[in-house]
Each structure stands twice: as C-alpha cells, then as structure tokens.
Image (cartoon, rainbow, N blue to C red; front, side, top):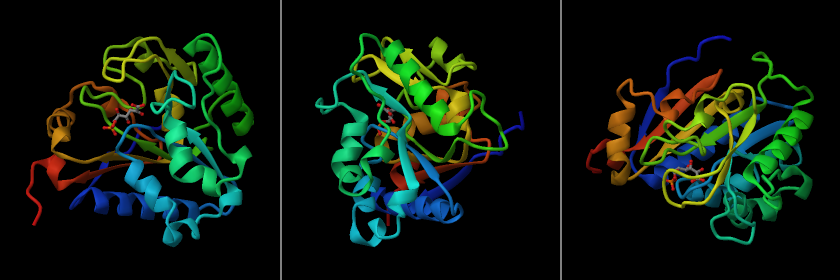
Length: 246
Ligand code: 6PG
C-alpha cells in the first residue's frame, strides 16, 4: 500500500469562509471526473454550512446531480426521523431537493444491531464499487468529508476502540459512543475512508483549539490516522488555531 502524502493544512478566516472553501474543493473534485462520482458525507455540526451552500443556486447548478452518488461516513444508530440521524440532516438541508433518490445511500438503521447495519452497508459499498477488495489504484470515493471530535475521533472511530484498528471490514458497528451523543454508531473503517482521491477535514471554532493542538503532535488519535491514499486536506479557521480574526 503506498504511504499517504502529508496533510495539506489550509487556514481560512471563519466558518463561512471554510464552508465556501470546502464547496469550491467539492466542485473542483467533481470537475476532474467526467464519469460517475462518489462523495462520502459526514455528520455532526461542522458540515451544515457547507450543505446549505450546496443547496444555494450558485453551487447547486454546478453539480451534475445525475452523475453524483452520496454516501455517509458514519451514522448514529437511530431512525431517520430522529434529529440525531446524520444522513437525514444532509437530506433535509440539500440532498432531497436535488439528488435522484437512488443516488442517496444512507446507512439504514432499521435492523436489530449496529453490526447488522454495518454488514448491509458494506454489501452496498462493495456492490457500488464492483469488487470485494479495494484497489489503491481505483479509489472508492472521489471525496470524503470528515469532522473531528473533541477526543480526536473522526467518523465514529473513537480513540482506543477496536474499530479504529479494523483492516478487513469496510464498515463496523460501534456499540457505544465515546462522546455525546451517546448512541451506538455505524462507521466506515480507516481503509475504506482512505480509498478516496481527497479526504477533506473541516475544523472550526475556538472549542476545537485543544484537539487541534493535540493533533499537531504525533499522538495516535483516529483523526491523525485517517488519511487519503490521494490528497488529505485540513481546512481550519482562525478561531480553531487560536488566532483572532481581523
Ligand atoms: C458524528 C460524526 C463525527 C463528527 C465529529 C465532529 O456522527 O458525530 O460524524 O465524527 O464529525 O464528532 O462533530 P462536530 O462537527 O459536531 O464538531
């Protein structure tokens, strides 16, 4: 497996600039692929401004909706009607208005356990990809969006949990969360998330300052271990860096 390239850190002024930079990268990524495109979304609060931007006229008209498929990197094991559901949040903000229904690929939670949900999503990903093994020369996703939690988790891969070391399974059930919301999760694993042309982290706000400082060391946190086999970018705003905005 090729070693991942170093992370490319891009500093922007504030959350609005961060969403704009992320939207521009998403469009640029789409424009490099004239065929079928796969984008893996993320949950939490960080991407909401980006999703609102994608729903705006300026951006929505630049997305070739019939060629783009939308996945999710992790899900809270709750029903789609629950406000905690990550894909329901993305659907509510932009996907349901623009994306063909069969291009939206939620992690379904209408089964007994997070593991069953994970197995089903793994089958769906493999069928979309057309193989049971990921080929580094043919990434699964064009773009993977990521957030970072206060404990250094990313997707639902929490520090010191076995899921973060999983190398065979594409998707795993995570019976217990390490931070709020304390609901079971389903998460893509590091090799699955790595199978992309670009992994794009968004980190904004002064409450992210402490974890950003820890990530700048060699500490083995999930967010430090998540890297694309292509390009990895960290979009960070001045508040997260501890800098004052002008
Ligand atoms: C989730 C996420 C998770 C999130 C981080 C950052 O389901 O909670 O996908 O990995 O991205 O916790 O969350 P915020 O964006 O809310 O800070």
